[in-house]
Amino acid sequence: MQMREVLASCLDEFMAADSKVVVLDADLAKADGTAGLRKKYPEQAFDVGIAEQNMASVAAGMASYGFKPYITSFSPFATRRLLDQLTISIAYSQQNVKVVGTDPGITAEVNGGTHMGLEDIGCLRSVAGVVIFEPSDPMQLMQAMPQINAYEGCLYIRLFRKDLPVVHAQDYHFDLFKADVLREGRDVTLFSSGFLVADVLKAAELLADKGISAEVVEVHTIKPVDVATVAASVAKTGAAVTVENHNVVGGFGSAILEAMAEAPVPTVRVGVPDRFGEVGKLPYLRKVMGMTLEDIVAAAVKAVGLKK
Amino acid sequence: MDLKEMSKQVRMDTMRCIGSIGTGHIGGCLSIVEVLTLLYFKYMRVDPASPRMEGRDRLVVSKGHAGPAVYAALANKGYFDKSVLYTLNQGGTHLPSHCDMNKTPGIDMTAGSLGQGFSCAVGIALASKLSRDGATVYAILGDGESQEGQIWEAAMWAHQQKLDNLIAFTDYNKMQIDGTIAEINDLEPLDQKWRAFGWHVIVVADGNDLDQIDAAIAEAKGVQGVPTMIILNTVKGKGVSIAEAKGVASHSFTVTAEEVEAACEEIRRA
Image 1 (cartoon, each protein chain N blue to C red):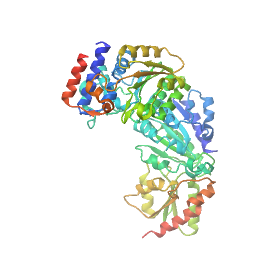
Image 2: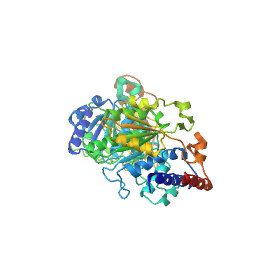
Image 3: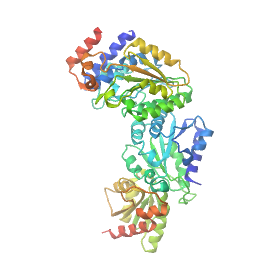
Image 4: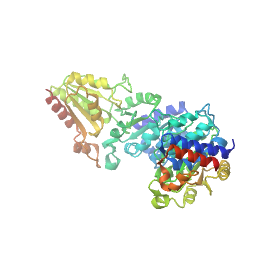
């Protein structure tokens, strides 16, 4: 099941149960999987056209009336394009609006650099009180959505919209504000979120072959970071790698480093090396950005080597 | 107290509110005193004892820097004691320079980053329609604010959604911080722009005349199928000669306690 299908089916469920749940699109409903909702719920799903800033503030106005809006677009347009509206109309005004940004980072692939949100985490992380969540597979998103719907406030879902491999088993138990230790290890902690988590687990396998015991921690909620889980893991392993689909400046890796600021360990960051995106498919883009499976393994070896 | 006397009271309290800290957005507060008086003391179905009453009429002052004028109207309406007006912009106050729905009883939407409040008003009007509660949603836009692209995004979509429960005003005092509207980024022909966006448009020749504004709101209340824009040709700093004389510089300036009392005396005699 594609991630956007999970999103749409959860929203469908919420909208059926609660007429105050509304969805606003900005001419990307077909891409984001939400187009069908407009036919089924004509009084709960709207398209504002290509006017993201208006979408954000309209949602805030509706929220002030007791409605529970979700706004959706591609991640750069759902964040940097409407950053001031998200900041003032929604976050500063304490409105209960959920923001869904699809195709994060390099997963925009052939839409290229203009459509690659490589700074969305950095932008939103510095807006007070905003929750940032990035799921890694359908099972996690399915479990997350009811908690997200129940959460009151500004929350950003950074959503890879197509198929993702299974990361979480059927008995997985999700907590929005608690990071998941997916694999225990002794020598280094690999932190990640989103579509890269599956590869980080593979990297841990490859590291085991090299005699390195890697712990894998999925920090699906990037703000607020589960500091306790991050700190406990690095206290045990003494080294870290952060793996992110975002500029390494200001994003996921920065959040992890802040979380261990009081007891830091040598950390190597894997992600977009402070540059803009370009067109290409994921294998090409991961290669030019230094984000391949091999890059993750090499970063872990380096981090272990940096330990005193 | 009749509306004329109430408008004088709101104007004096606006000056005293700003005067309490000695500086503020005087020009753009004074230009909307009459429309605020009509909304709070004739048209809006609100209850000061229950500021968040469901189904109430709402006002979004999208030109959020006019906070002090709104606070003066709210205090006279009974939302809070007039002594609160003298806490404007003091640390910990409930009355910040720009309107904040989470700080001030009676404020329906936070505004300050220009253009956004109007979109919020469109969302509120849509929410009221969906709730079928019969509320009217009012919004006051600055003329300088109307240079923001978001205003026109919102205008287009309000028409698309047939929001005839939305009545907006432009405080057309023809001035912004860096100069006159005409010399910075002209809005003319403003009435034609709004008509082209599908709105019912009423131009009020004297936007500081209670009777003329009253007639415009009464007309707007009867409009069906489209939102209404009432363009108020106002005077920046209206009713206080030192403010009017400053022209563009009336946007924000310092006043002494003596100047505030002289202004109040001038208002009283008007």
